[in-house]
Amino acid sequence: MKHMTKRKPGRLFFANPGPTNIPDSVLRAMNQATVDFMADDFLDVYDAAIAGLKRLLFTAGEVFIYTASGHGAWEATLQNLFCSGDRILMPDCGYFSRTWGAMAKNLDLAVEMPETDWRRGPDIAAIADRLAADKSHAIKAVCIVHNETSTGVSLPLPEIRAAIDAANHPALFLVDSISSFGSLEFRMADWGIDAVVGGSQKGLMLPAGLAFTAVGEKALQAHGRATLPRFYFDWTKMRARRHRSFTGTVPIAPFYGMREAVRLIEAEGIEQVWRRHHRLAEATRRAVSVWSGNEGVAFFCADPKRRSDSVTAVKMPDGHDAEAVRAIAYDRFNVSLGSGLDPLGGKVFRIGHMGDLNEPMLLGTLGVVEMSLRLADIPHASGGVDSAIDYLATA
Ligand SMILES: *Cc1c(COP(=O)(O)O)cnc(C)c1O
Image (tube, rainbow, N blue to C red; front, top):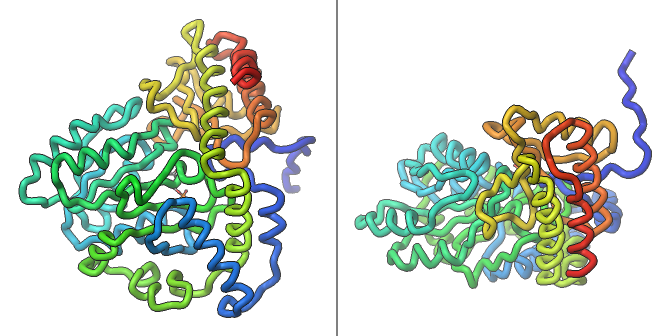
């Protein structure tokens, strides 16, 4: 007989740092019977969704959308911008930058991945020095994960742009904003970002399955010279189509959802969305600060200025398994926390605070984290939730 999962009453609190909670109105918007993706009715929805996406990215560039998760957009972006053997600089800051680098190597790029302290992220002066030393301009791009979802470290993109400019280096500035877009301040044009990779299932509050690259003029020129093999993800082919994206069938439902998600974000105001994330992140940090007493759990991100507003990675004391906390939170209390990824497996759990989230949802999650720490006998100091309440009630 098939094992029956015990019913868990109430709502699943989804506190993973992606995918994220999908607002009810977005779910309803996606409940859409098949329509012709070349019909005007759909094209209106599509155009509105894309125009909204560009407004939220603060770009007037082109957007290429793929039926894929973020990994597909990574691959598409590399294939469309580079030639075999091209050199790129991609600091190794965590699971995601490391994986993107491995993908680039597999696509036959010469990938420079300076090691960094994953608890701090790269030293921007070191990036500037490396670019200044590259007199022949062999480095074609600086690739940065804005918000390392595996470590909870976010990087100051304007400072990295300034480092590229200070070295007077023509490298493209390529950014993964998959877990920052729609949560952290992000301004593609003002920050001189040439191409940005994003996904649907994090700050954009949609299911996984759509990913995109927004591309500025300089990156489009690089595309004109790029010779890596590609087919399904070929921007040139996409640009010839009415949607200026896709090679095959256009998935329609996600665009009804995207138009609605953009409407929700703009009704709140994108800058208010960023402030809300900061506030909820700060409440989370207040709780973790308290829990870190008694030589207990700690922030994985050791640099307070770089602690992410969309995810907090909580480091376990030596000899304790983060999976024990996650299991109690999920099995007993119906709260889904993020696991540690690859080398951080068992060493951290992650609290996602991105997307469609408010104070009671966050406090519910923090309350369950504190209970789970207690039940799993993990060293910590109690009172983290009180501290989060104090902050939220007064800030
Ligand atoms: C989630 C994420 C990805 C991968 O996206 P998938 O949609 O899971 O393929 C890449 N980069 C970052 C920073 C992410 O948070």
